[in-house]
Amino acid sequence: MKATLAMDIQLVDLKAQYETIDSEIQQNLQAVLNGCDFVLGSSVESFEKEFAEYLGTDHVVSCANGTDGLILALKAAGIRAGDEVITTPFTWISTVFAITHVGATPVFVDIDPGTYIIDVEKIKKAVTPKTAAILPVHLYGQCAPMDQIMAIA
Image (tube, rainbow, N blue to C red; front, side):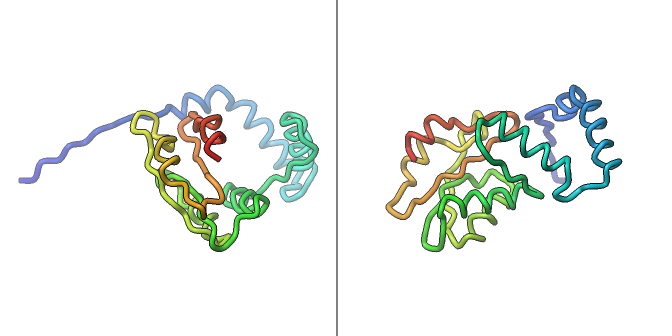
């Protein structure tokens, strides 16, 4: 007989987080559905304008999904074939797909086992003359240590 070990490790309670904003999301979703302008409509235009103001920038371009956003960001940064992009393997496939889509090569750096976020010390060791970008991943409500990552970049 083979023994099995089952563990339930809760990293973040997404349901509890969602419940705090559920009514606001439902109200706004219903307004978009009632307006029937799902693509490039007034809701998208309003979101882009408000988000640009929030960020203190002139323009924001929203995307259909995160993959498109990552691809656009890499292209805007000038990442191309022959470049290396440091990232973590502890991510959704879209992170790696975006890197390979622009022709670059992903270079994997392991996570900090305490936070599950890319390990800054390991980023330092992975940088080569071909490194063109570092693409961190923010997970479970935790942001990657961007000040430290930007200092390396």
